[in-house]
Image 1 (tube, rainbow, N blue to C red):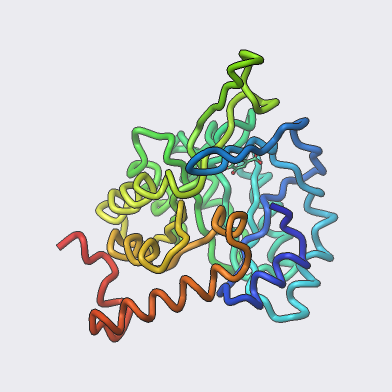
Image 2: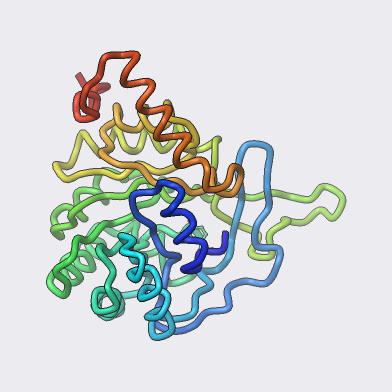
Length: 279
Ligand code: DHB
């Protein structure tokens, strides 16, 4: 998905409450060679390699979004806490409304999951960033962990304002004729319909272990999908792959379906169902 100011503005105008930028690092990165993305039966497999223009070149992009008063969540990735804090500071100066720490890219060497699987590092990076910026800081965590609750708790101890769960799942597709993995990077991150039950389980587990809000993400394309995440304990949701499949009209569709579900079930306020599955 191309996530420039133009496409993010279209997404916002189509009914999203905020936009999350692509993950930005300190220096421009080309990313991996093609193929970087393939559509599978029940989802999308991608290994882009964190391509991005670098933080210095991202200023205008945020400025463009802020011209239309769009709430922007600036996603950043780094390999250590001083990198994350420099990126967060720049994002804040450029006008971002919140920061999302991507500590969960499933394959980029030195980044993502390599950091996001270590509770000490997660706490240290989160608390360093929290001391650097005034805007809220979200920590996006990976489902590719046996200790997901421990990681969420580490982010909470670092004073994260919210947990974003989940990032993509480590996966692979092999071409039978060529007898080789399809993605140039071999391993990628799987998203879309197939990962929704995994995301719901992760949010449910995290909700049992932390007292900060959770933003649910993974395989949401209907109002009922969002409601399932709410019942697991999420207070908001993000949409990714559904945009690829269904375009920006998916936001209004999801919002309408949530409203219809609430009316039918006599739910006046969404807070009535948040965490409902825990009772
Ligand atoms: C990439 C980054 C991610 O955070 C992810 O979940 C999958 C892929 C990437 O840039 O390759």
